[in-house]
Image (cartoon, rainbow, N blue to C red):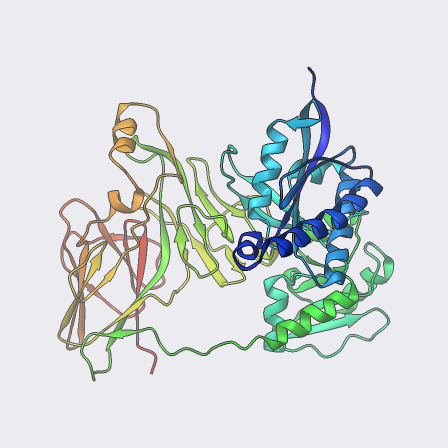
Length: 510
């Protein structure tokens, strides 16, 4: 039997398992009946067919991707107005095999996996639906790249936006909280701009002369600070706007107002310093700050042909995560930045989610978590991704602090990221043995006790501790690395590079 192209959609009652534990049989029956009475008529009106009822979930087939998304948006709008149950919906478009009223195939599996990632009250869809839908009819935005259980590789996932919802990109939300968001409405004169503004253009037709005139009326700004608020936008206008390095906020004017008002309600907790001082009651004289990810060049030891690391919103680098902001990939040809979420900029230019661009020395990357700088390097390193973190250690005069995966107390531990999902292997027995023995870059290139920083009166020394894993020093303002094959003098502003970790020497913040 042949296959046909369909849009496969799943609906699911959010928090159904929790409801089961708190409800009697009559209440559960009412919840399921309410789900069916809400979903089935809307599906039918948009040309869909319920394939099967899985209790708290429906599997539905549509002939057209756009009709499937319109049905999903209407369901979410009806649910929001009802004040009752909460539903998530997920879909993708591709070939399915229909047998005796049921449907099978990779598209069915993919839609089910997307559903498992979809938050309550949202509509997520896969790349097949994105290609087949009429983008001018459906308000949508990217939500990132995901590794889905049982699905090869990673998939770019998108979100359809109901009329009542608007998800503010992090740069816009942060600007609203900090008082640097400027809302420029059509017909209004450009106001005085605060330092480092984020300008939100509202009420303009995408691609219109009025929009271009408004942009031209502004002073010279980083393109990434310009955001267009719109609900429906054609692909041509979307691409032209984003190709210029600008951002888009998808939502109706009413939903946008609500989202900004909600962002202003968020109270951020001011925390104290995370510095650990080694001797209680004493002020640290030097701070060791975890300040970057070191990227070894490849091929590496005939074992690793290429690899990547993902950056989380909290600033930590991991082997792989569905919650990543961006990915840095090192290949023999280039070091590449992959944008995995909206709001990533490179040298002020917005990088659409899913795109990859090569990195060059001095490139500045901006994320919702802050900025990073890429620096090329030597001694077997493709480069360094530099950004201070809250992982730091205060050291007082007369004290020695160790660095490494398992340093002696007092010490600053290096990340020891387990797992090999981020590695592509070289061919051959050497790589096969390394893979079988649990090889990771973190464990292979840095020891448990890697190096020590000795702080004495008027001097700071770097002492290598590991006989095989190299430690390097980078002078302040320099790009070259100096091998620490002996005790080296250091100064505030210098860096230590070992394995995949960069540690900076800082003067303590008073």
